[in-house]
Image (tube, rainbow, N blue to C red):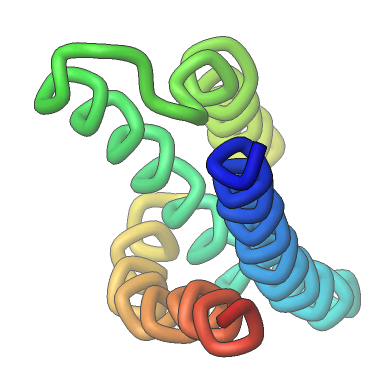
Length: 127
């Protein structure tokens, strides 16, 4: 009985850590969406680049671990199609061009550590 309770507590801590990390990423993404709603798509394009990077990281993890990893289904059937459609329609309506995409790549690299803070917060608060 004690072994099952310990396993249950580990699962709860894992979900709580995931919740804190996901909340941080949602907060940062929402803030950037609010900022870009007043014009300028540099930050929006940078976040879109991060979504594409995250989707491909889930695919790479699945290949490396040779098994199911959380997020692979979401990456394949939701995130990658959303990103491709968003890039397509932004380009179609003249909102995004190649210089903007290339300019957004360094900004995306700067945003990676900001998003990783969510993982650190999840580990810090769930001990």
